[in-house]
Image 1 (cartoon, rainbow, N blue to C red):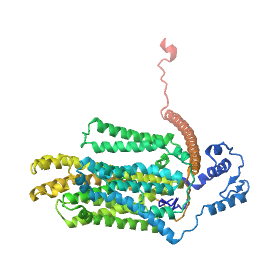
Image 2 (cartoon, helix red, strand yellow):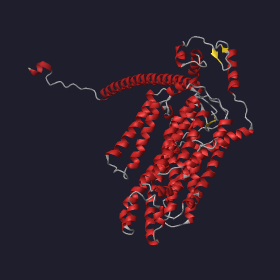
Image 3 (cartoon, rainbow, N blue to C red):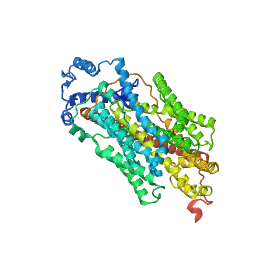
Image 4 (cartoon, one colour):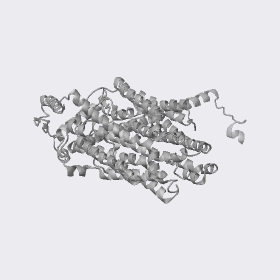
Length: 626
């Protein structure tokens, strides 16, 4: 079972004790494996050979195998076959890195992850102030956060496929450069549209670590031709998943705020968004040569459960990061900086359990206990948020956040490791990007849905606001601008503010109830993740277009084996069914025969007990009649 993530162009693998595909019994796979190895040698997995030349070879021919040092290996000579893996192993093993170099590389990767997380969460405490500065609508308020999350979600699968074709390092550097430029645009924004443009351009990669990655990240970079690489990208898949996601989220954003839910605009965005996503999966299944999201990743129940847990964790976590600061700034009257301080119990507790969960997995090789612990405590913690008061109650504020943070922390890496354990090594990068896509799309949807729930609840309570507040203030708070009106709330007199605090608290309660229900679904999904024991085995995996071609050929061979095994099982079941039918027929005949014998025997016994007596008339026979 592979574990941890892909990094530095290779993945640190946590391999299972038994590496039999799909956990099928070893004895069942030996004949097929031997046939596959024979075909692989015959088909010539030659370095630099294309797919057409490979498929043209006859399975019965003896073709020399080329090992990485360029020497030919004759499959007919066992000694050559035994020597080939050793030569390949020597070729694939990277030179040892010094401790300082490893520390610098890990530092750069940690900076990348930190900046990606920072750009996701740091905006939360500043959103009310940004909204006030640019006087944005409630729709733009939600998009300050979700614009970054949406663009990140839409781009992750594409970047993952880019790295498979052109290598990790150049793609990481390119994305890093884009991040720097976009961050500069966002920092120098003079209006909300410019800020949103900068946030949309940003992608989840590091900023400061550019130089360290450039000079110290020494991994093999494939020399893929740019034209051939661009042709290999699944552009239909990229466009359909990006377009479908954007349309669906726009429909959620506009519904009930910019347009009525029953309006043609909202309905069309939602319907065509879902239809476009369906087209994306159809393309990945039937048409894509090198799919962005291979359908085979969704064939495992455990993989689906991991993605569901990831999706729900992303939704619930980002809700706490976005709407707790809103609660602090509107209901408790905290400034943006002070609301960040109020968030410390949540942040510190999740940081602690995130580290503790990683250590636990490393020491024990078990990822399920942290996942179960996290999902249960996350559901409990967000359930407690429903009871957050409309006044300061530090015991509840701190305790509730600590419990929620204890649950959120372990789920960051646990489901990812679980997902990586159930995929082939060649699918590690794709599975990791799929995991990132799932998390980012979940956070994007969560921010929008949470905003819609809050907006609609505030609008529903406008009559209550009008009974206490001036007409203009009540209109502002109840017409879709409540989240961006923290300064207006803080300026109200105490009597009016208490009413507003109750209204805000009630609206936020509906958000917490929604996320508790979502978290409970995540708890149930976590129990569907299958268990495997991790081991510490390092594997080097090469990227590049040629490797993608080899992977595609290997997948075809595996699919052929699976179809053959499925057909064999079908024939076996059919034969067994025919045998069972014949046996049933024989048993039925035997039962019928026994039944007839029993009936005959019963008839004879009845005749013996009750003999037939003939009565002759007086006078006897014909003479008597006369």
